[in-house]
Image 1 (cartoon, helix red, strand yellow):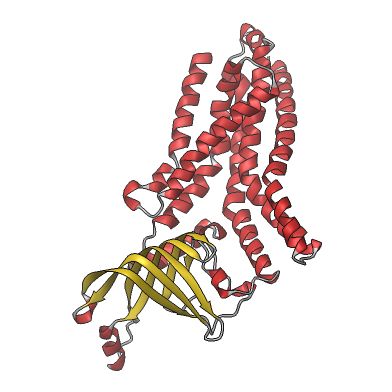
Image 2 (image 1 turned 90 degrees about the horizontal axis):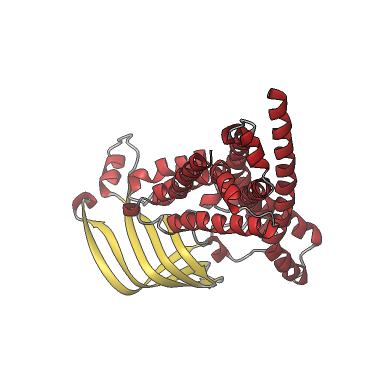
Length: 382
């Protein structure tokens, strides 16, 4: 019986690996097609093939984080769909082999790929994505307004922490600016010789939209904000707050001391490992800054890594139920399931500025739902 199981497992895994690596190559080629088109524009702008090739290699890990799970899911759907169509699973069951005995190597493989994906999402992608951005700086990104990237807390400007949800050229959407201001109580303590560390009071500026204006002669970036509000500490020792609504408001950022080099480029969420993000959370926690985007990013890295194990659980019963051997059916079903899975991830990411919706928990919702469905279908097929 043990010898028979080894033969069956080797037979299934051999077909699974073939489909997995073929699918992985196809999906990586599809996802990198957009960069191939963009690279033609970069070459036309005078960038060397060496720089473009280096940038391309740095973007590969990002595509692998998506391609590995979907290639694994498609391979499972294809191999078990064929086994079901050819009645090979029925013959195995008739020989006294349960579906769990057939499937457990696939689950172990899913767990192994989960570890690989976590390594990629937590270490490789942050390094490669940040290195790619640094490479773009080295390739000629000279405008300091390029630091105002969407989806990250920009800390490079003195006394300002800026978060921009969307940016389209010089037009901004959903802006939050945290401006630090001195606390008179701390100044008094410093004059009296106290060793206590100075505190920072934070003025919060929010706006629905804005526009970037850059004056290279004065080394000033002006953010012309529209339709927003200002929450500013006031009163004795800044213990009170008042809110002001504005139709237009301008924030000026001094860039005279900034040096546009790769070393000064700030890190976005996706450029950080989990330990680095936790450091940012500790830094911002006592400053009245919304840390939900950081918490959500940590959960996204972990939850999305588990997609391989989740797809191993649900892909097997779905492949058995497909009863079709055509590759288009397996690939199509895999793409549909993959799309629905990441739709939840995207939805949770879109709510990362609204802690009342607990977006960090939404990252785990597709995993929980698919695991429950997969276990239910497996019990029905045993």
